[in-house]
Image (cartoon, rainbow, N blue to C red; front, side, top):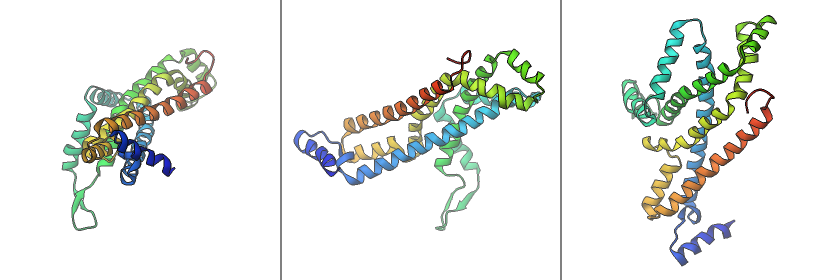
Length: 248
């Protein structure tokens, strides 16, 4: 493996193409740690977003008008405003209104850290889209299927959990896949609040080593690879869950 890393040092010495992120152990470890942070953000946001989507679409179908209005207002607010603005409003606005706590060193730190604000902002933003994706899937389930379930004596919750959601999930999986891809790509905006994800680490490396083209190439390849792996998994999931008459 050392031969592989040293090849990039030889490439730099011979051609001036500076992939220091490979041959420099410090840069390599720094970028690897940033990649792990990027993956963590993506996974956490995907899980929270899916939960918001499931709860939100259930509230949309509630008989209580106040719940339906709340969900509609939430969707319009977070779907119709830029994600970066939402992140700044939470990180700089809401955070400033919260009490500060001792961080253990005698200094006062924000109650909620930047990483948590990133997860919250991204999850709320993409959750609004996920609710609409699930709603479209539920509305595509034939009403006769729902009526047959009720005729069997199922409660409304049982129909929702055992019939509507499984079928709707299959129907809306392609659209959900597209939404999830945006989640993975959108992790780069965490750079705006100094989270050490891949874009932030790349910026620090090319600032010191003056190798912007090389680092941007590495960054592009990393994101394309991550999204490709995720899309491949989702495509396999689509094929595994495919049912005749439902979905694609």
